[in-house]
Length: 157
Image (tube, rainbow, N blue to C red; front, top):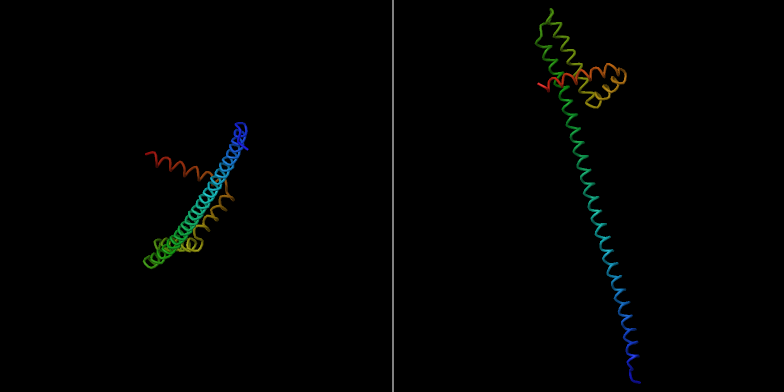
């Protein structure tokens, strides 16, 4: 049977419809592949960013810990130095009289303060200061205002 013009046109339309459907399916598949690749890339970037942030946080934590340890060591050294100075004052001070009594008092105060600083450290001193402020809020506020006034005068001129 020979192809008539009407039959050929119907056959081309049917083939064109299949080709259009095939192209549409291929386009959907390509878009889906691109979307999947984009999701994978975004996930990888997010994972890398999370790892970097975690590493930065770890480094900051380590640095803060080292800084805290150094501050504690410095505080301990100051306390030890105060005790050593108290011993030197006791050795060189006169034994009697007003100067001897004053030197003994100063040496005792230095030794007591040095032991306190060496044993308590910064955190212990901070806790003691917090307790003192809680027990005496109005005098603490007045001391703060006074210190602020003195700082303002010193910085002004």
